[in-house]
Image 1 (cartoon, rainbow, N blue to C red):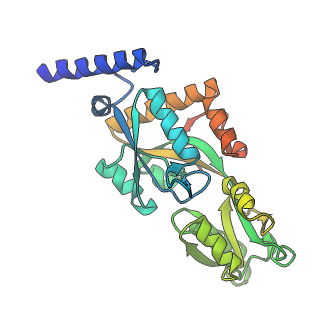
Image 2 (cartoon, rainbow, N blue to C red):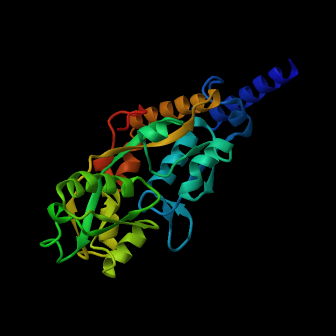
Length: 283
């Protein structure tokens, strides 16, 4: 009885604090009690994918679309945000163990991941093949068989390339694509520049960013893959579903108010913006 009264009292205090600060009021059923009691949201990220999540080269502070989006979600829920930098491969394990409450790291909502986690989808990403300027005449989507193609090993692109190669190269008796896993987009572009790769896979959201850094150095030649939804994973538990629904509702309010659109515009990712926030809608 005392614990129940204490939790109710904490919720009431946090709600009143939010109202006084001008933040939206928090309802007790919107968030897990442990998060309400802590007053903060712990978010895992991997700052290796500009302009989505990376470190400012001058201040070394976390920045990018996901970072600003996460801070806005925190404000919408009346919570402070604590960021945890985690290697991409360790993010989902960190979510399982409770080290973080949620993850914002431009993670694709895939069928395999949905077996264990629920995803709130917030953006769409298109993988694009790029080559060095001058190579676009000899390296096209039709001539990728036998070529060495790099892509970040942290995501789904290496397996996507291998699957595409099996259907479009090996099945026709042509040499398969040589898949080279890289440490991220910067690494892929550096290896492409040095001639270690024939082509590299990048997300459409990052091409404009790199074009500003190295104008005219690389040429996108298209994509052999369908676009994917990117989402925020949550545990399939009672608390996980509470937080999932609260974050989805927060994003919906941000979409309706224009906050979401403003963040999208600041980072130049309008082509990936969604008209509606969905759950587990990835392919």
